[in-house]
Structures are given as C-alpha cells and as structure tokens.
Length: 209
Image 1 (cartoon, one colour):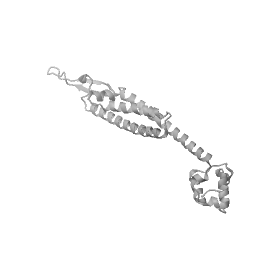
Image 2 (tube, rainbow, N blue to C red):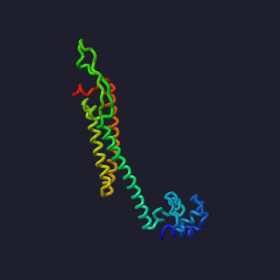
Image 3 (tube, one colour):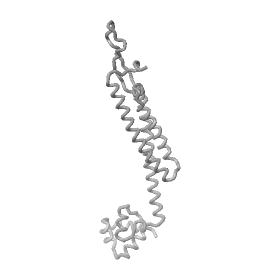
C-alpha cells in the first residue's frame, strides 16, 4: 500500500476528517487532499507529524518502494554534495600550490656584505620571491609540508569519485576534509613566515646562494 492510500485509510480508521487531520499537523486541508491523492509527497517534518498522529513509525507509513526511493534520493543528494566539495577542494589546493611557487611577493632589502670604509653604501636589492623559495632559503620546510598535504588532499578527493564500499568512502571523506583543513592551516603559516622574514629587511636571494 502506498503512502497516500495509508494516510487516507489511517485517517478514516482514526475517525478524522481532512480538516481535523490538517489542524493536527498544522497544514491546510488542501494539502491533506493532495497527500491522499498522491500528487504531493509529505515533507520529512510532516511525515513525522503524521506518524505521531496515527501512532505508527515513519517507516511504517512508507511502502518498500517509497523507502528505497527516499534512500536513493538521499544518496544522490549526498553524492552531489561531496562531488562539489571534492572538486572545490581540488581546485583550491591546485590554486594554492601554484600560489606557493609563483614569485608574486616583491621584497626590498640592503646587502651590507660588501660595505667598506671606501664604499659605505650598501647595495639596495629588490626582487620577487615565492613562498616556497623564501621559506626554504631560511631552512624552514613548512612550505614543503604544505605541498605534501595539498597533493595528498588532491589524491583523496579524486578517490572520492571511485567505486568503494560505504565504510571506505566515509573514511575517504573524513580524511579529505581533515587533510584539506590541515593544508590550509599550513599554507597560512607558510605565508605568514615568508611575510615575516621579508619584512625583517635583511632578506635577499644573493646572500643565501
């Protein structure tokens, strides 16, 4: 028996008119008519209210086909959501990877290594540097850590599109979110470290080569 037939049958068994049932679940009589005709399927909230009025579980109101349909819709909705999230994580990770290796930040400093009494003026040095170069030249591997996290995140998000059992897929999703969050944190720390050493005023490529 389909849901619309069960609603009509249970309403009559409980001696309720459409108006009375409508008032109990706080909807219009027209909506009850639509429920009973099968033209409209109750929302999850109204389904809970109907089950409470009739004293039957929500799953007891549904036919096997309707239960399968709800599960299928939930799976499709969940799959679409995670597909969008996975693609977003991959795109952001790739963007930040590029951002970490492109020399976008301009630095300005003075080289005092060749200053002598005869030549007391230090050499003014300017140039552009990437997060990766700036951190590595200062013997800080934090940018390498970020790159590793980002690559792992891309791999995990790509695996989300594979055909795995639900338990494995759940582990992949959780891992993907954790690694992505970790990569963002490490990237911010990498940028902050690069910014601090460049702003110190003594950063220049020549003195570290």
